[in-house]
Image 1 (tube, one colour):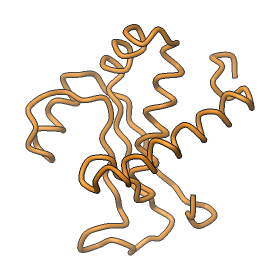
Image 2 (image 1 turned 90 degrees about the vertical axis):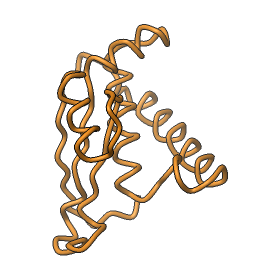
Image 3 (image 1 turned 180 degrees about the horizontal axis):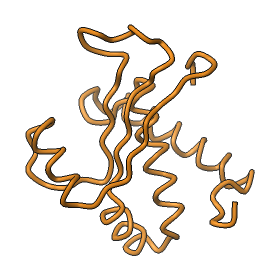
Length: 126
């Protein structure tokens, strides 16, 4: 992924109510969402600590609904959202960079998800 060895990130799992507040305060979107990432490598203080990648916040409520709607296990959906958030922290973007970059991100997600499945890392009995 191009991250320095020893890279750290913060992961928070919250409910929809908290996610809506975070989304409203920081992204001006007054609704819950499944995952939000905040990079510590961008902005005025970006790069101060190259080992601090950033924060990933996941709504467990939204993840549970999406898992049920998609016919998948909750842990798989949660894992996918974590991976999605980490990819954002690594510079992947599907929202503002156009279709080509969105396709690159989706391709990387699929590749990593296949690896996790193959290695048995999406099992609830870790």
